[in-house]
Length: 75
Image (cartoon, rainbow, N blue to C red):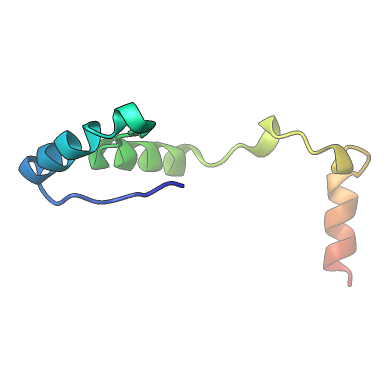
């Protein structure tokens, strides 16, 4: 299971993190993301756009993209 929480201030963040660290010995894994880092990632991807060329889909490797688009448009 996974839980995502937004903590409004740094002091509260430190308290919650201190509490959660007590559960690490029981297998809790803490993945921390700051809002600033997340915003910069989102902004950089928006500026550059999404590149789907790195995703290989075996079921589409025999399909020509332009022909596929034309078939969809002509329906």
